[in-house]
Amino acid sequence: PTETLTLCRADVAALPLQPGTIDALHAGAAMHCWPRLDEGLQQIRQALKPGGRFFATTFFQGAYGLDRGVASQLRRPSIEANSFRFFVDEDELTALLVAAGFDASRVSVRREGQGCAIIRAEVAAEEEVVDDAIERAAAEEAGEEADAEAAAPAEPTSLAREPDDAWRFMEDMD
Image 1 (cartoon, rainbow, N blue to C red):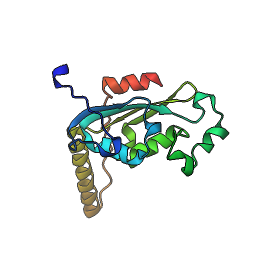
Image 2 (cartoon, rainbow, N blue to C red):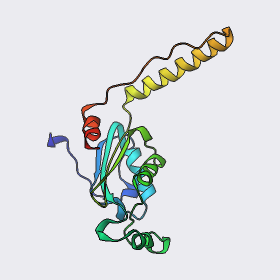
Image 3 (cartoon, one colour):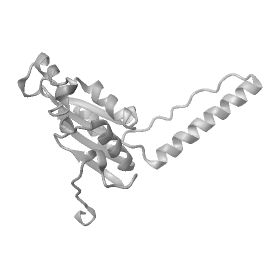
């Protein structure tokens, strides 16, 4: 429903958004241009609601036909501030998203062609956060009881969940 859609143009490192209020954000072919990338990713993570999603595309070294030696020269700090930032690999982008506050298990970065990165990061839904807290508390309680009683540890139970359709879509793309 477009009645509830609001478009906003802003500096990604200073988003005019309240924390935890946005369902989804998209940055198409943009992250390599952000002069304050770390701050921008933190702003995005803070703005997303529980269950919120961030989708982005950007470029790896080797994009535009530049060989890795030339592309790596573009990563020098003196040049990087005034030009594109070409990312080394999927691990670098994942690490940046995790440092911004995304859970690594909810970040997907895949390479498309020679140099395009397709990114998806999701914030856990409130129910999952509560479930995780309950599971941790139960595990701690069980551990304390086992220590107190010198009992054998309980059999582990599987708490794995089926991924939702959107995550299946991302898995199918791999």
